[in-house]
Length: 209
Image 1 (cartoon, helix red, strand yellow):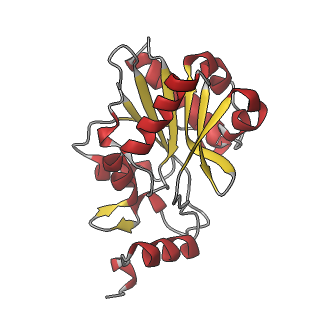
Image 2 (tube, one colour):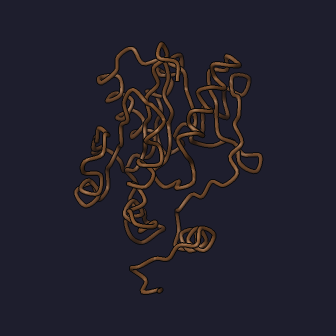
């Protein structure tokens, strides 16, 4: 990444995992819990700061990130929805790096994206001038997504559970896209089972060996 261009990474992991039935941030993925795997996968991105937003089950999840180069914040208002976590996370980013030029917003339940993909989001912003660069999978725009600093006030104004996807819909002329081949959202036990099957992994807690 251009040293003159500073970008932060915001990982959202505050949800209650109600559909999963257990904290999905701690789901075994290979040798690590899911959220730790996501943090480690993004480690080569070169972000000026990485902020992880926790909420529900924060006390259980936080130890899984011990020793990782991330700044953890707890969103006490996580039940409001993803908008509140973006606000809390963005505030933490700006406190750590007030002059940051851009922000990549990613979800802590997406084990497929890589540091190289995040770098490509930023590169497309630099190449095209589009102020938002989203991931695209099967024609749908979704996180991880890059937002230039011009959109920080809009991110800070988000409410409810729509999250940053609302900006992807509203700012269509400002959005570029980077295709991503696989992008699992692990929301339900079926999602998790399908991911484990596709990736050749097992769930040790299920006794499947």
